[in-house]
Length: 284
Image 1: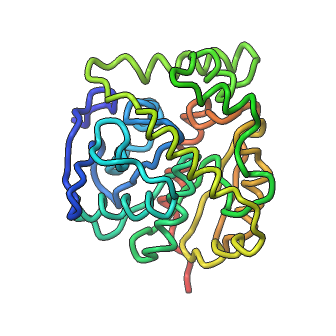
Image 2: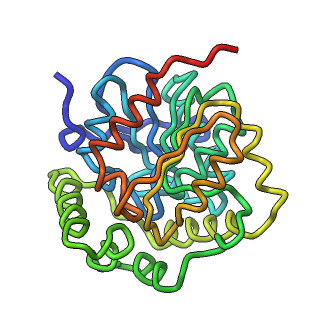
């Protein structure tokens, strides 16, 4: 029987470069789906309800990139290096082809992985994403980074960014947090060095540069772009921009949701991702 993500044990694998990555996995079969996390997220921040939905018919692997949580090393301050580190982790697992699900900062990393090593990624899901160089993405609004960027962000402020102020959305966020942090074996908290490096990488990614937008036109794999209609971190206009630039893409914006749309709509999003990953390949 497949264990729920909340029941899985922490594992470790060492890359050729000597970095020891922490990861958890569940599910079996199919092309493995690699999860790439958001700003300040570690293994605990993947909603078990979502991961279990994704793992119903495939192997799903969540991991901490270099320096994050219980992984060793120092977190790099560029998305490009994060992508190289993710590739090294996948190589260390002996995987030759994977699907990628990148969330927020992780979606930037997923884009880079697909561009750096095209043969590695079969299909890519970009959740709450934006292309490099998009205008208006150079850092988040002050209230957003103030809410999630403190040394110890209050859960209520994090909820303000990830969920709407409606009773339904707020309740969904509280339930998601409850699912994430009920396990007995929690991951190592994110360090301040990781926080600083990750936000440096996010800001550098968002430096306006129209020419950089063309990079994603080289992505030749099928891509599913998704976002919340009221996301204050990465507004949905960037999802539309990204989907318009990628040759083989589809897009869905989830209603009445913010940055945490994939937990708030975990059943629907899980079904949409499964359909996308399982759809027949287009004929040449």
